[in-house]
Length: 364
Ligand code: NAD
Image 1: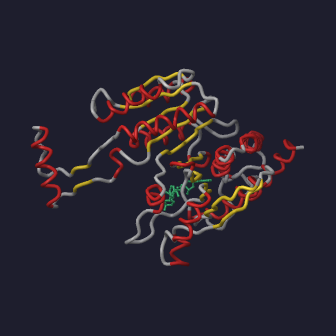
Image 2: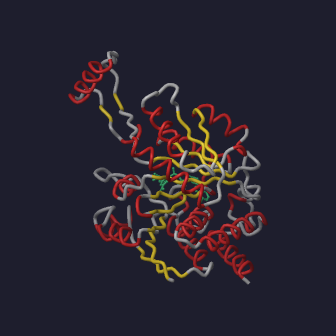
Image 3: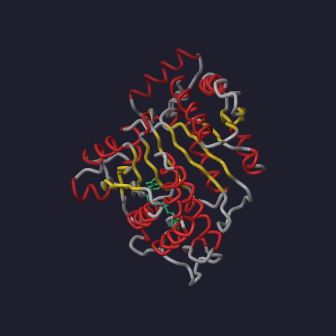
């Protein structure tokens, strides 16, 4: 079977790490036809819009995309491409696995966590009211009337909303992910002791959903305590599910625990299996064209993608091969060497060559 996948090279160092990742994915033996599409800065140059209809139609058609990083400073008048993609395809689940690999410098020894963040609701929905606007007055007056509270007149206001629908589908996503990936426990993270209605709703719905998955352990943690526990004993946790704001912060915390930006993959997933896989780092434009960046994070996103399209064994093999190259520490990029100016560091494409050689050994 041949899978058709939308490939977005991105900009800055994106095209280099996307090419390295494409080659590594193909070396697993899975047959893929790549539907290459431009989004962001390169699309503005070619089509006058960061978001050409052809690229959107491609994702809609193929349902699965692999995306290089996109520079988000597009100039005035353009909305952020990452936000636009999320909205266009209702990519409600942000998946961020974080794992320690021997050979990657990390402050913690033994981490293997998956953060599932709700992507649409909460304080990040972008509902804000600025000082000096008539809308702020209206909203402040309505809130004061409805709650009896007083809000200072020099306060700007952001709205936090959390729905039953949004909570149910993200918690269900976390349990389904746990089930199909052999994970043992889901922890819901919240601040329901203070935000009794919004976070309280999230926690109540999480408990209801959990009761449908008796084989998976369920527990909850208050977000501040969760942060401390993740730093002190991350090995106690498995899958975490969080509303948008806490998820944003905690997913970077766990990325830091396993070695930071260069090694962390991510995915944004919506209804009907629509999913866009990427590295969490940006386009690092100062290194563009230098064959210098570590493609490991996007390659790990590629492994997630292979599992998502049902090629689990190939995804596992790709991850094992990346881990083996990194553990040997020879054919790795500058950021994975003990000192950053190590002359034995290899480039992006040579790292990919090493992973591909390893894949061929595992395959043989
Ligand atoms: P960045 O992640 O691009 O780079 C910051 C620094 O981290 C780099 O200079 C480099 O030293 C290091 N680094 C990052 N990834 C690395 C890798 N794979 N290998 C080795 N070193 C690596 O962050 P930035 O400079 O703040 O952002 C650049 C652009 O990317 C901005 O326009 C930003 O908005 C955008 N961005 C896009 C995404 C995305 O598309 N998903 C994510 C984050 C940032």
